[in-house]
Length: 419
Ligand SMILES: [Zn+2]
Image (cartoon, rainbow, N blue to C red; front, side, top):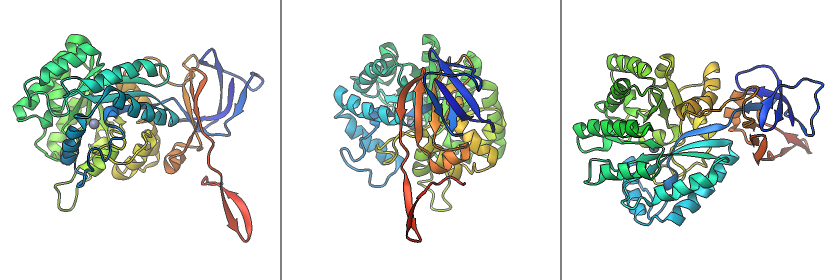
């Protein structure tokens, strides 16, 4: 197969890509193949990577009751009621639907947090089996996530250990939700020790609050340095960093860079859940993305929620989350628009430690074609993915909608791309 006139992300020129035995090969203008496709200058990226979603909660919006205020804490209360009704089949049915949505958006790798506060670990068991079913289509990493804290009830730490023994890939945490600051510190140390013992990665919901006194990210940083776990540790949300004083944030960010932490910001949920206690001006509630990036820290975009008690909208498209971050993160600069595409592709691929990722001769023929000529246009249009390949095989495709307008009595086609 030959794909002609691809506009690879980060490049201004058009490239031809050959695909042979599931991998990318170099081709020249004279080469032929059984199937040749002219992409007409469309943007091509490696697969989208979702580094932060809660698959166990997807599609539960309104169950058993709506989140009337829309706040984080009412969301946690509604979810606690819904967890009582969880079943293996219920989780699998909802997740199967959303995995298809993600695949249609070009996502091929997903890290999902899974609530392990349930003594029977029903959601985790359902997702471990789905992880096998979906392997090779959309690969899952599962995080043992203690939604209501791990030291807030007697068996919290036992459930974390059980989740790891059952097959969780990553150890999670939620230190700002523990009963005391000291418990929060202990929960981070427990998670890091458990991960180190089992050779796993760490991904902690850290400082997801506007409270400028919430500083568990410094504990994660110190533990990562002391244990030599650089590259295996991710801090998600860190919205409190937005409110730290400049002197503290400066020292912290240089230590985060030294520790080699990966950071995940979740623009959709953060935008609606943070700043709820402000009466005006209302803080945007996003972490210090630009300062982290300037220090060389790997920052990724997560979707977080799809139609659940915390966020009622979404269909699992990382590009939609990136579009929102253009505005709330003020990332509308020319280079920043290109960086946003990296934040849903190569950056999360590094955070997830994906071993064979990226478009290069000899690399896997895993790629996504956008119905847009550039990164900026892909974001502007939240452009449909017209073709998704994995190992050279079609996993998803779409036929873009054809719009027409009647102008001066004549019906004519119209596209939203500048001619
Ligand atoms: Zn989350």
